[in-house]
Length: 181
Image 1 (cartoon, rainbow, N blue to C red):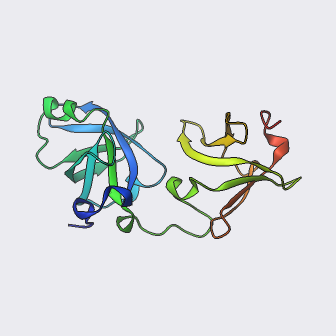
Image 2 (image 1 turned 90 degrees about the horizontal axis):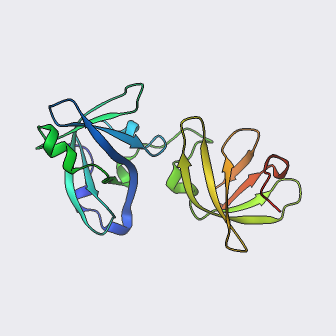
């Protein structure tokens, strides 16, 4: 079995998805994938599941299939709709070592959290990435500005100009963001 999430400390866990609802009668569940993380795994994979990283239990991802409505997961020991329903709302976590490296220029969502967002035109600091949100049409950076308010910045090629993880920055086109001022 790949991975060692059962032995990883809570501070080393990465949220890779959330269980949404049961599918069918055999214990499978729809899941919301956070970026490319969940769908990059190859079952069987050792995961952790729960409402937060500090209170999880071990789960083994038995099956994973892509559907138009999102990934469908099957877990060892979860064999009926009632057992699957008990997982609804749980986050799925894994150790960072379980995730394969991405191609150059691509980043897992968790790698962007904490980076400083700066404007491409002015160079001024806009804020800090506090989360990456996945929407049906686009992923978006949730950025906390200096005044404590938050804005969403779509992660399109026109908006996000560069990500430099080594320097801890995301450069964005200020002209593409309405809520900047």
